[in-house]
Image 1 (cartoon, rainbow, N blue to C red):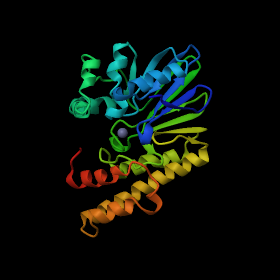
Image 2: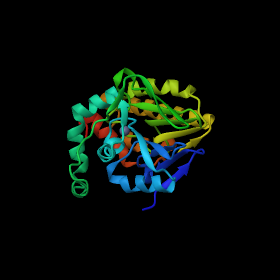
Image 3: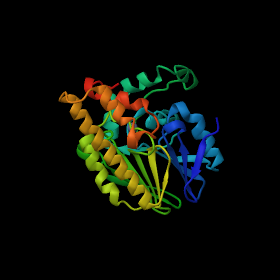
Image 4: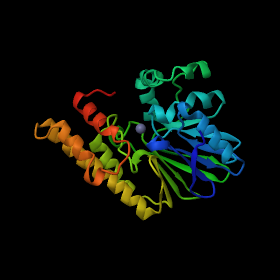
Length: 282
Ligand SMILES: [Zn+2]
């Protein structure tokens, strides 16, 4: 399948995940190398095709915005090609703690990948930072900032990336656009706090972890605010369930209607509610 690639600026491209699947960003440097932001082993052909179509010769750095499988599972593939992999210390620690179980669970439906990539396993990033760092390639400066409020927002490793030369902001899964988010790995109150400074961030183009990219700071701000409103509203409704004032079905119905009726990935609503109530992670 040909990847859907959106060019945001002269050197920034995004592989847009079909139906709200994970977005991967490619920042092309002057020497033809690229910084690749997030990659999923299940979609490695899409990533490789995107590299070719954008004229990138090789990956200079792979950056993981956070620990989730759909963002980190191709670490193995790129580590084998001696690509340095950058992530926050909290992302790496969480992968150490929970990653192996997660990795096995996510690969269960696609066992053929173990044959295609012998030795395929959870692979930890090897360039680790705690609060901020930058990654440089010729003509490319990326500012990485750890954003998981109190160590846990959407995930424990949440990192944003700002491509200085072309003013592109990559939000990771702190932001979903036009699709229901995955909240059950997260801490919603902390996530709400983590979103606040993002209302004031500067950029010309904004890349969410899932969903369409956004042009312009005004539009971007509106999406960050929508995300905040969604999470605050959803969290309030989860509390209503907890205190017996609303049923799960009522809340699920509410989250699929009105302002939320047009959002994609509606299956996430039941999963988010169910996981919250049972305390199960999966
Ligand atoms: Zn995620």
